[in-house]
Length: 357
Image 1: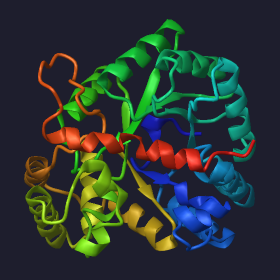
Image 2: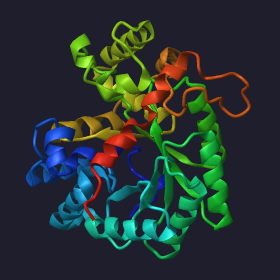
Image 3: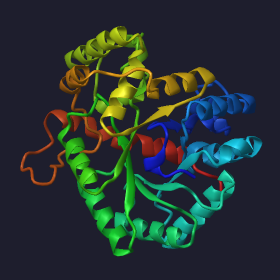
């Protein structure tokens, strides 16, 4: 398997919608049913041909069925196996307390993925009563046992990243990635910028989910459609928000100049910021768009990147109401504090999709 630095395309494919549990068919996919096997095979062919290797899943996606279907897909397409980089996530739920619970969970993930060793294990959201360091030490043991090659974090702020780094170093290991919301919706948030500085100092790669804001930064957004976008709730955005309108106008102008979609502009911007954008794919067309976004056949100018930087919003999901960032005496109860209550939304959704065993 390729290492993160050797990925031929700096883009990851999200597989949250690849499960086939009844919750996937009714809740996650909004009644659209599960993706047929032949569609997954076609998606894989498009990705491999386009040089996209990184697949991101989690034990909680479809109760483990997303992982299982990735394993089955690779078994049907053996020529692609050695060209993929697959990451999954362990969620430290309140019924898990021991380091062995992580080891047992990883063994289950690997069995479903049909691999002996996982390329990258994310510790999914620091929500457990036990300290994050406990789970980092457990992940280090998984590396020692040959179950995992690399350790990553998910939804961790600057302080949490620093703590995890120290815990990993104490075990002779390192943290390789942090998966967080990274988009033009939150780029100018102080909490995100603080976290980015810590990650840069420790050579930790950012894997950024929702680079297009679940549709908030794409063509065709309507007031009615915005009501159904969870990212709007997570970031506290409302229809008619002046900052969002200015940002969307900037993206749209650049997209017209580049003759690309607004989504592709957002993804390309994310790549220029050194992140690996995580793009959800459900159809072959989605895979083709992702490949095109990461293609070297087009690019953004330095001036366009700067314009997007300036227009970017500061809607952080790394802060909680009233929580001040390290080194800052100001309270987050003003402005961005309204965005905090939804911080656990991804965790709550994942808990609904938990593996049966």
